[in-house]
Amino acid sequence: MPTDAERYNLLLQALATGIEDIRQAFEMAFGVVLPSAATLNEELERIARAIYEAADRPRPAPVIDDKPTTRTHFVYRIDIWTNDGKNILEHLAGVENLIVARAAYRIACERWPNARITLRQSARVVEDSRRGDVP
Image 1 (cartoon, rainbow, N blue to C red):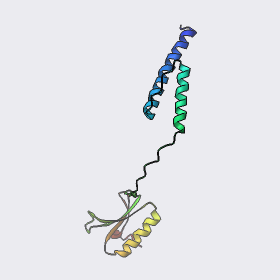
Image 2 (image 1 turned 45 degrees about the horizontal axis):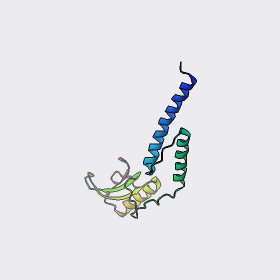
Image 3 (image 1 turned 120 degrees about the vertical axis):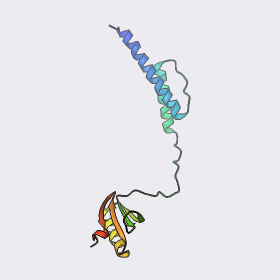
Image 4 (image 1 turned 90 degrees about the vertical axis):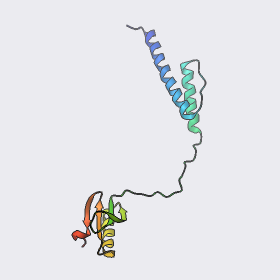
C-alpha cells in the first residue's frame, strides 16, 4: 500500500504531465514560448498569467467577404419542366414558407398557363399544373 508521501509524489507527477500538455497546447495556439518554471506552482502561475494576457489582447478583425451569399437550398422549389416532364427548363423560385411558395406557384401558373410547373418540397410534388392542382 503506498504511503501518503508516495501518493503525493504520484499526484505531482500527474499534475506536471497535465501542465506540460496545457503548456504545449497554449504555445501552439498562440505561437509563443513560455519560459520554464522551477516549481509546479510557478508553472501554473505562468500559464494562467499568459492565458489572461492573451485574452486581453485585441482580436484581429474578421475577414468579411464582399461577395453576396447565394443560397441554393430551399424548402420549396417552383420549376418549369419540359413537356415530357423529364428535365427542368427553368428554376423559378426557392422559398422557405409554404404560403409564399403557393402564392408564387399560382402566379407562375397564371403567367405561363401552358407550361408544366411544379411546386416541390425536396423530391415530393406538392402541386403540379398538369394534374390540375391550380385553383
